Structure formats: structure tokens, C-alpha cells
Amino acid sequence: MRALRLTAWQSEPVLAEVEEPVPGPGQVVVRVGGAGACHSDLHLMHDFRPGMLPWGPPFTLGHENAGWVHAVGAGVSGLDVGMPVAVYGPWGCGNCARCVLGAENYCENTAAAPVPGGGGGLGLDGGMAELMLVPHARHLVPLPGGLDPVVAAPLTDAGLTPYHAVRRSWSKLPPGSTAVVIGVGGLGHLAVQILRATTAARVIAVDTRPEALSLATGLGADLAVPAQESAAGEIRAFTGGRGADVVLDCVGSDATLTLGAACGRPLGDLTIVGLGGGTLPVSFFALPYEMSVQTTYWGSRPELAEVLDLAARGLLHTTTTTFPLAEAADAYRQLAEGKLTGRAVVTP
Ligand code: NAD
Ligand code: ZN
Ligand code: ZN
Image 1 (cartoon, protein in one colour):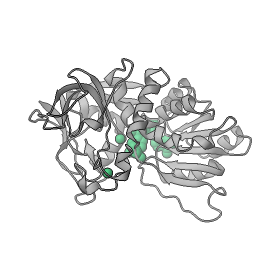
Image 2 (cartoon, rainbow, N blue to C red):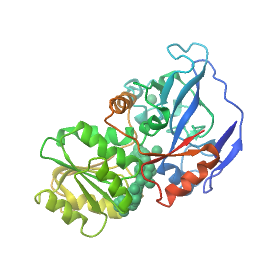
Image 3 (cartoon, rainbow, N blue to C red):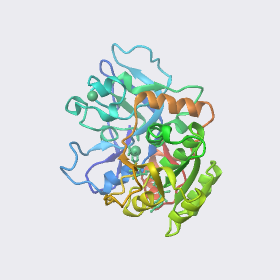
């Protein structure tokens, strides 16, 4: 079968012929319906060098996947061939205190995971291929309510990651509060909707691109702010001078972190989701009083089930552009050039 492979660090992915996977005991092979192209894959292609991660190429890209059960290994029960499923992407050891709770994104025994801190599309073969080997049936979540794998695939990362980030700040988002989403791409366009669906906060979207701001407004953002010098002032003015209760930075550059600190409210949260490589100098007067700053990484399996439920109820809509597998490399080119709105999804 054909697969889009990263064959070396610091290189562009290539379409290659690989063996079809066969499920061993406890394993499942998924026929891929959709595989999202995440900006993290661009970081993988361009920002890493040998030795920086405990795993490396070659492997098939695609770490946000959904499709249908194609074949099950010995001992797998409850998953029938043809059943639509989403793939829970972070693959941990399965036995540590975090994994037992379904938070394999924060596995504490990564040495016992299939690849330390990685998963399908991140060190192991991912979903940019006709078939994908999933090493344990617990990594599959049945798709509820007739959800199409093409719209479900981005929910496993572009949806799950901001859902986890928003959920941990729920207590700071009562009626009267304001949340800011910086970067309205794959993650951000779902972050706007997750805030609308699960909190009473007013939502402000910030982006450099007019098309991204239009998308945010169309998805229910209360205010769309161009990412420029005046952005912090506009956000302060909209909040009556108080500042935003929660800022989700889906870019993570020096500029966006500075904006996040400048537009936040005392006691607020600044959550760094983007891997933009920026830094935020911290000192007593550099942040609003008692602002909490944290990173977040992906989300838990129970949270994925919650995201899928929101989508099945029609509360989340993935904006997608689809690409056949033969044009998957072009999806990444367009993502790198900022030409996409929402998420590019490869349909093998
Ligand atoms: P994307 O390319 O789809 O979206 C990024 C958006 O940010 C674009 O709309 C772009 O116009 C906008 N942007 C760029 N620079 C900006 C600036 N200075 N100010 C405001 N907006 C700006 O990317 P994505 O797939 O949504 O990923 C976003 C980031 O999140 C990436 O760094 C990615 O690696 C990271 N990520 C992190 C996790 C995690 O678990 N923490 C998970 C997935 C992705
Ligand atoms: Zn990702
Ligand atoms: Zn674990």
C-alpha cells in the first residue's frame, strides 16, 4: 500500500510503497477514512535533528486519525470489522497511574510505551496510508452518532488538545468572563467552538490572517482582532479594561506570548498550546497578579469521548479541506504557507 513517509529529520515527506500491516494479538488495523495534517508535523519535518527526540524516522505521518475497523487480532473483543472509530493518539504504557486514568498523554513510564512519548505518526506508522496498525484496542473510541471519519479525524488532536486546555480552565470562565484564542488554524477554530459550547465566556479570536478571523467570526467569536500592536489594547477595551480571564495561545511565539501576558486579567490563565518556540520572561511585574501560566499536551481518552459527543450533537464543526493521499505533501505545503482555513484532512 502507499504511505506518506518522513524518511529523515530535516526533510520533506515522500509517498512510498510499504507492507500492509497485520494485527497481532490485542491489536487492530484501521482502514483510514481521514488523517489530519497538523502544524506539529511541520515542526517534526523542520525543527528536529537526530537525538533531539527518543525516536525518529522513518515512519508514516498522520497522528490525528479516524476510519473503520479493518481487521482485529486475537483476543480483541467489542470491535467489529466495519465499525467507525477514532484513534486516541498518545500511546503510553497502559499501566501507570496516568495511563490507568486514560491520560496516556502524560504516561509516567514512557520506557514501557510502544515508543517513548510518541505514537502513530510520531515515531510509529500513522494514518497517512490506506491502513494503520493500532497496537492496542484501548486506543480506539467508537464514533458516536454517525460521525464521518473525515470530520472526526481532526477532533482527535485539533479538537482534543484545545478541549483539554479549555476544560482545565472551566472554573475561570463563568458568565461575564472572556476567553482569547490566539491563532485560529486547525486547533484554534475548534477552540473557539469548544469555548462557545462548554462555557459562558465571551470569545475573542486573534490571528494575522483575515481569512482566519472571518472563520472565527462565522463560528461564533464575539470579537476578531488582527494580530498587531494594538491587539492587547483592543482586548482590554472590549473587557472594560479588566483583561481576559483565559488566554489560549495556539501559536507560542515571542509575540503571542507577550500579547497573552499583556491582555490577561489578574487571577487569569495563560495556557501555551503552540510549539512556536517563543519564550516569556517571568518576573514580579511582568505578568498580571496571580496569572497562572502553563503548557498543555494533547488530552485524555475520556476527554476524546467528550469531544466526539459534542461533535455528534452538532456543537462542533470541523472546517476541512480534503486531499487524496497522492496530494498529501501538498496539504503540508499549503499549511506551511498559511493558505488553509481550518484543517487539511488526507483521505487515503
Ligand atoms: P495552524 O497552522 O493550522 O494554525 C496556526 C494559526 O496561527 C494560523 O491561522 C496562523 O495564521 C496563526 N498565526 C501564526 N502566527 C500568528 C501570530 N503571531 N499571531 C496570531 N496568529 C498567528 O496550526 P495548528 O495545527 O492549529 O497548530 C497550532 C500550534 O499548536 C502549532 O505550533 C502546533 O505544533 C501546536 N500543537 C500543539 C499541541 C499540544 O498538545 N500542545 C497539539 C497540536 C498542535
Ligand atoms: Zn498534532
Ligand atoms: Zn503509562
